[in-house]
Image (tube, rainbow, N blue to C red; front, side):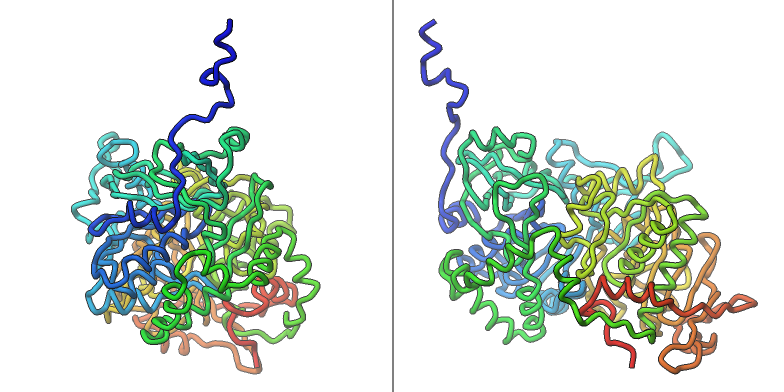
Length: 591
């Protein structure tokens, strides 16, 4: 049996071609003008290093690329600012930190027509990529029906009678095949077999659908023996990969979670860096200076890291520890214990109470909240339900199930929440199965830019043509949750007689909480009715129905007996303020 000693027969023998190359060479060889480039968001929010290298090499090449990504944020804005991108296909085009909101670069380019946008939701875009990866022409969905997203995508979305249930309607999303994908992994071997840790967000369908495969960066290139050790975490086989480059901190200013792996250092998201870019976005000149500083003047990723500095990078590593919030609570002196409160704080408390009442009455099992004040309200509700012994699981779009919100950071997707999950998965599991599947028992709590008396929500584009942020997961929640609540600031500009762009249809919406009061209805097809007003705050008298009507864009109906809500108790204020100690969401303190 002498052949047992042959090298080709050894189990540890490494097979396959060596695809390791520099990031510069990978971009130069594989990213070509005219392609549809898929920017994967799996585990890591961003593959920034690759995007910045594309920005360097494509500077001055106008309208060279089309982009498809779940969300378009600061790194993609660098490409749009440079005139490199002619079209984006996405569900969200805004900034995530410190608060979620519009991105001025996208707004300018969409308004002047130099950039086109194709709008989808957080679930339907991955479904299009999944269909392409599976080699099928379409996949069904319950999302988008009755929305403006349905009407503006007639060639790629079809609404039809359910062939197995003529009483129901179903949507079909057409397969979407990118030309090339870029991704950032935690580790990979020289053939491109890559580990991606959960939450998996869109998963690897886009990468597996791409005609030309994947340009991959990874925090570390490791021996195949290490990959075999973690084969249960390998999500992308090397057969799909064109090149692989070792790029530490390749997701910065995004971060990396350590769920499931402890062999590599990880790092937190750099909120300050993102916020600096966001502040500069407001002016083309200031943003150009920012791009010159952080992208174009750095001839490589290594130069970029050197400019960031060792101390900053070490701080981000320390901030990634899952228990860091305990030290932050000890050190935090800014959390106000003042019993006076603002209308925004009252709105969060009012929504929390209404969520709690509704969850117990209807025995809901899961709750999904959108980013903003609505997630502070949902988190407060979660802790009060827990205090009373009611078991409910918080879920979040990118793949979080059963997470427990930590203090000191109001962002839903902050990494300290990840390790508290009972399960980490992907968008299709959370949004397609847990939220809207056959056993779905979920209530949704979302925000809005505009709302009308029928509960239709707009977060995409105003009547005046101003672009906002897009659907994200809002349409999917509104389409499939058993019941939806919305929190929105009260003004005539937000409370519209008719929402021109319907991002999220209002059929499942039952309650709206504004910064003045509560609006409710029993069923779809009815108008919202004012049922309660807020109590006095900061020495002001309680809100009257007349004040609410003055700041409403339609002829508001009101209940026969308007309730004046009880003010927040100190514990409610303490909890919501602990989530947002810097008041990014809560705004200015009461005076």
